[in-house]
Length: 62
Image 1 (tube, rainbow, N blue to C red):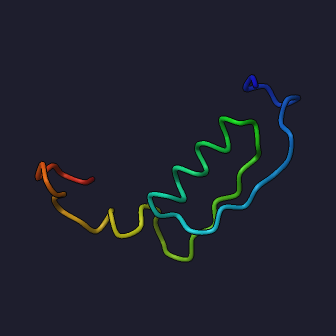
Image 2 (image 1 turned 120 degrees about the horizontal axis):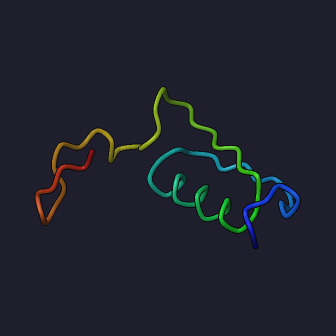
């Protein structure tokens, strides 16, 4: 599907703005859906946004 407005085929609500929720929202957008991302917190990213370093590479998660 293209990225034009006339090809959109519906709307989806993704509950939770963690890593999985954001990825699901991006994937659904690529499929042509309008996506409403709902998060109860002040920011998206879930627990991953609170981490300083990630295992096993010790990379910065931000």
